[in-house]
Image (cartoon, rainbow, N blue to C red; front, side):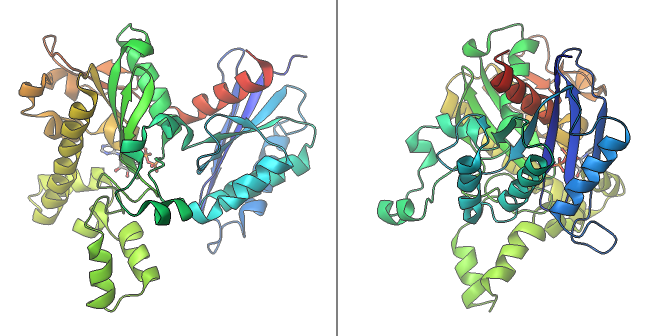
Length: 383
Ligand code: ADP
């Protein structure tokens, strides 16, 4: 039997998502999530959650011992400067991923556990790490370097890395396909608007700028993260507000963004409240959209010529209101949304700009699992 299936494991900070994909026919025989790790009623830790996943798969004869399984593809959040491509995992690679933990303390240790458990269960099976940072490794130094003392920055690996890379890679290519063009010819701004949110500027298939930085905190307004702010806010809150570093960390990562502005981080709820005339929800929406527009303008200047702007992830794919507000009044940049197309709901990649719009605006559903599976399969089989 030819092994044509890839198990994709995404061990997040408090959940493990999995999908089994068959690369021969495009089917997905299994998918699921184990949530609330470390919380009452949830799995005790990532190792236990991974074992639950393995048991669920085994109960359906799709377990890790299945001869149809070609490899496991692991989403790994931080690849630092070393990992710029999908990588076959061995002891040395695993140790290197572990060493990157200070750069992604919530994620890399969870990813490492996922890899360990899968390797223990099936030591002979190829395991591949697909890094969230990898697609951003082509960003030039003037864009990834922060303007701080170089020695200090280099000593502590402080630079822009960028995240959501798998999604930006997939969506930028899918957008070129939607335009019927080769990715190498197309310049795209990708707006990944989920709970976390990031923008990227992709020139001819290569990422040249992205909004997340050393950590996923920088850039756009997100569900619970502030995105950009004056770094002196941190000193001010410490000195004047008497807050500890850990409290400020929690404030900016967990209690800010849409949640901090209006008490809700779900765009659906915010839309419902706006319809009732709720001023805080309206303000949260306005701050969110204003930031988005600033990035579209900045990335237009970075790219010089923009062929397409692609909206993806939960908010980008589903919120016609966010797309309309972000793209409105940008005719001078060659952007003209078609309100009827924009309002149509759907699950396929689609154009929502007017026929005469110089820049094509598109909704392009992301598929990180498929991208991870393809990269994994291609590395282990050469296909
Ligand atoms: P994650 O970053 O958790 O993977 P998603 O890409 O699934 O996030 O996006 C989650 C967000 O998408 C939710 O918080 C919600 O605000 C938004 N969303 C989902 N469906 C809709 C919708 N129909 N309209 C507006 N926003 C939506």
